[in-house]
Length: 125
Image (cartoon, rainbow, N blue to C red; front, side, top):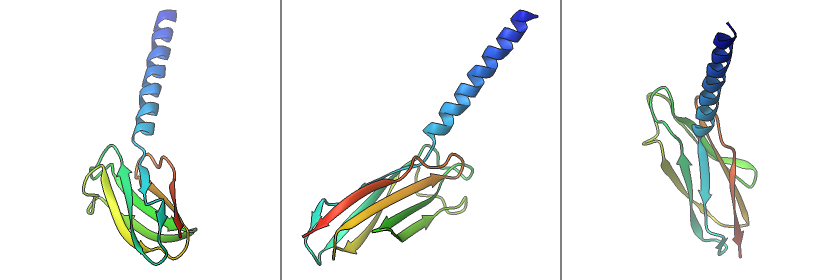
């Protein structure tokens, strides 16, 4: 009887660990790629690299947003009918550099959430 209880406890713990590590591995992460400096008035390209394990109708990145200087600038939303092109993809847009830019982005997995925000600063000279 004691052996059965010990084995059940060990198996429960192992199953718990397997599910815990899986959820951390599948959170959507983003990286903001932007020039460190730009001349005032020039147009610069900003890239958001999105990484996620999974791109099926049941498990996918469901949104990515970008804030510039504290205000939402752009948001991409995905659904099971409109999935991202792959599990890892790059979003790109252009913006005119008139003043220093703080660019913050975040993405989210529909099942596991987000690994958090990523930030880049562009100094405008």
